Image (spheres, rainbow, N blue to C red):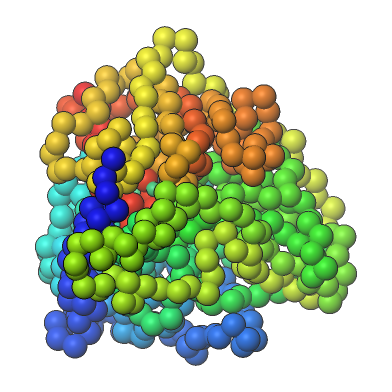
Length: 549
Ligand code: C2O
Ligand code: CU
Ligand code: CU
């Protein structure tokens, strides 16, 4: 076991390195001229929306056919994403963006709309003053297309992706993945979504008369602090950085006008570290049930009626909210409910902060700007206000079957154990931290494995993510009471565990067993990653390479 002095010394070092690099990244506006700057004139946005807590809510931006998070359907054409400094730094969007121009339209962080089976060609152009790479989160692509960080794109250079969409219809996403810089670049605004469509998705839209951009709305959620810097304290690095405000689709404190019908909301948690406990409530506080229809890996076999679900960083949920029983003038809130963030381990670090500093004789650089947040992890907040504005006739029924998700056959599977814990100032998987090129976990292609992921009870929650493959959650064991109360079956699974997943939140003291079918159509060994998606943990090394041979 490490001493507290170790913890503080290591995190401070880490913090200093990060601070210097982040300062460099922010400096781009002053000097370097971004690549192809004139091909991307500033996008036309509504006025800046730097809402304070007491300011009136702002109208939610619903992604349209261009602009911020605009829907871009490449339909076989190559698309260039330019990672660059934003021209107009809005408080809700951060300072960096992926700019694209397609068929005469300009996009910022486009939502790529693709068909299952479609060939996608993307060029990443790096107009940042530092290296980057894009990772396609949840898409089953070859290692060279995965953007796992083993190859980086230097400033003013490009990288070409060329892959086929092999995944089911769902919302996937993309974000930077340069090891040690993922948290900074993502926080500063680099992320977008990929919407894969297929027959099951079209059937659902037809059955419920859903129209993307009107009654089917993506909610890309990121919590942010005031200002436009990524400036984590040592405690932020230990816990993961949480912001004070919630931005949905780049808008702080948003409301949405709705009618008395069914809406499909597709949530992506693009926050660095925050977990949401999503629920709908009346202004009086009573819970209004909703219907969960999908998660990371697409539609569930059958809809599940829920009152609340946890949504960890990088996870997605697809839900239906039925407003037929509401009246014009009613309000409904999408909230995050209070929960215990279970910071057991890091609480210890915090308690010993002063003692630790004294022991090492280091200046209190980390503590000096120790961030006192206004929205601590686990405290409740309204995420989005739904304002019922219009009565409409609507008589569609939610289909009883949504998709086919065959169970993975685990009869011949070998089990691989993983332990999540903290030692020597770092979060670890199997006592190891990430080293580029270090001995990976080796998996035989076209075999099924079960993984047993155990989190120490003195740990904190970790959102474990695997690149390249979706998995089936088989069971949750010894879940904390707060989680056990939400279990849906004797295996201890939650509503969000059904269907297919690429990220699963493992709470302190909990064991989660998953099944993975390592079907791999690409020749030669392919290198992927298994890591915690709390981006501060990931950058700190809570990540292991997975080589499929
Ligand atoms: Cu969102 Cu390594 O992933
Ligand atoms: Cu990923
Ligand atoms: Cu973690």
